[in-house]
Length: 71
Image (cartoon, rainbow, N blue to C red; front, side, top):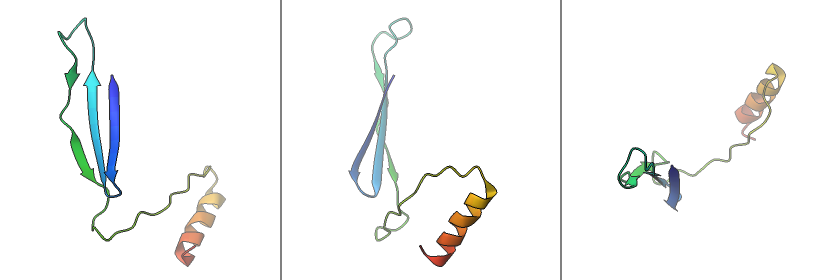
């Protein structure tokens, strides 16, 4: 199985999958490309997302407090 993710612009994502299984399929099968909008409004900007270890409730409170202050 091969998955392809393409981003032709900042607001769109295209996904397509190809499956090759000679035991089941006579030839490889490729899905139609699926296109998703990543923004609700064309003027929306993408926001940075910071992935952190947030296992501790105190870490979550700090993250939420910083977001509330606009940092």
